[in-house]
Each structure stands twice: as C-alpha cells, then as structure tokens.
Image (cartoon, rainbow, N blue to C red; front, side):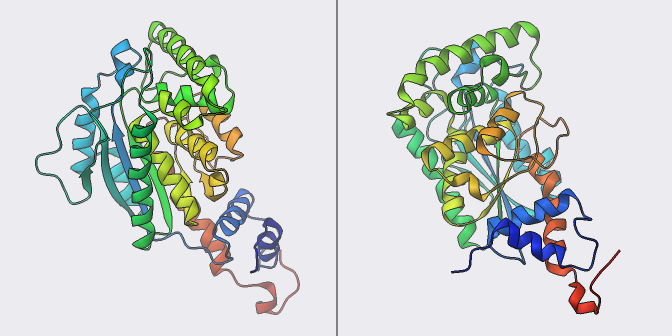
Length: 341
C-alpha cells in the first residue's frame, strides 16, 4: 500500500504551474489534507455537522452567565434553522444533524427530521460535589457519538464536524484541559459566555478542585477520570471523533469544548488526532494548550468563542481552497515549461 507523506504532497504542489510555495499557508493546509485523506486529489464534499446538546449540573454553582434553560431554548432555535450554526452551515453547503444527549428540558414537540432525542440523562451531576457521570454513562454518550460517525460515513460524508450546545460546558472543558493537557487552572479557565470577575474566580476554583479529584484516576482508570469531569455532549463528541478517525474520515475540529472532547478521544484511542484539522483557536485561554497537546496548528485565530461548530464552518472555504489547489491546477510539465513566475 502506498502511503502519502507530507513530502509527497509538497512535491506534488511544487510541480504545479505556479512559483513553488507561492500559496503560503494554504499549501500547508493542502499538505495536511492530503496526508489525512491519503490522496493527492482530496475531497471536501459532502460534509456534515453533528450538533450535540447537553446540560451540566455544575451550572447550579454559578459558573455561567446563563441558566441551563437556555440550552433547551438554543436547541429549539437550532431545530428551527435560525441559529448561527444553521446560517453558516447553509452558506457553506454543510448538512446538519442535531442530537440531544442530555438536556433538562423535554424533547421538542414537533421536531424536524434532523433532530434526535437520545439523552443519556437530564443533564450531568454537579462535578463540583462529585463525578459528573459514571463510566457507564460516559460510555453511553460515547456510543451516541460513535453511531453518528458511522452513520455519516455510511451516507458518504467526506468531512465531519462536531459542534455542541450546553450552557456551562466550558467548565468541564477546562477540567479536561487541566487533566489531559497539563494546563494550570489559570491557563485552562476562561470567561465562557461572558462571566464577570467574581464568577470567573469561582469557576477557576471549582475547576481546579474537580480536576484534582480526577487526577489520581487518570493513569489507571482514565475513562472513569474523564467521566468525572465531562459532559454528555462532550462524551458524544469524543466517541464521534474516535470512530470517525477509525473510519479514516477527515475531522474538522471546532473550538474549546470540541477540542476538550478531542483530548478525551486521543487519550482513550491514541492516534485519533491524526485525522484532525484544527479550524481555529478560540478566545478561551485553554484552547491553545489543548491544541498544542494534540499537535494541531489552527487555521484561524479570530477570537471566536461561540461553539456550535461555527469556527469549523467558517474555515470550510479554506478547506475547499486547499482541495482545489491539489485537484485542479495543471502541472508545469503539462504546459510545456520547466519554470513559472
């Protein structure tokens, strides 16, 4: 079997009818895309965004600027096709599925075909007082995501994106970044959806304590340790990433919470990150540390922090451009010259 290395992809780019390396960082993306897909004619369509929603018991401790009820309201907005992720997905030709993995509200009364209620439970337990979930609950969430990855691959989608909606979920994301990327509480904890200084200090203390409780388990019982500080939507994204990588899909990675899920997937299934392209580095301070642990260089650094897969959706045209460069440009030998520019 022929294996395409980065040097092979760059040699292909250097042979095209243009000055060598003249497309700058787009060529780096093209190389990454070619090696992830193991082909010099990569494809970026069709693509699917799977949005996973879940609530978090730790919100009761005042770590978020918004109450948990907003998760359900935003799920309804996504289901109506009027969320930011909905608009961006439509703009960039990206299919969407919406999966409720565990919110405190009731399922939508008249859901669209792309919405599915497969909740593990009505939100996680409060990670500030004990484990957010059991290992069995984590496994149930993981399998929800793994099933979505299998479905997407079976239906022929070439690029997979995981997005999330869950008020308070930057708190478990920060816990996972401490636990799995070695970040400090100051490095891992940010303002999420816009908390004030008092709330930020409370959030930082809760994250530090929860991560410290889970730390002794990480070497011998990593699934249990991760479950103790994760969320149902995070577990689902981790399963989505691990299964998508196993099936050799191209995984376009979104923001801080999605990257925390990627850390969990990589810890439990090493090599998962090899199928990933990081779309952006968010405004959350822990994101840069999580990406560094995964060995991923983000395409954009625009201060985005919404989640919902929106950063990855914004990066899709760059992915398309990289594929077009590899697939559609003539070689110098095809135009009868040995040099260009």
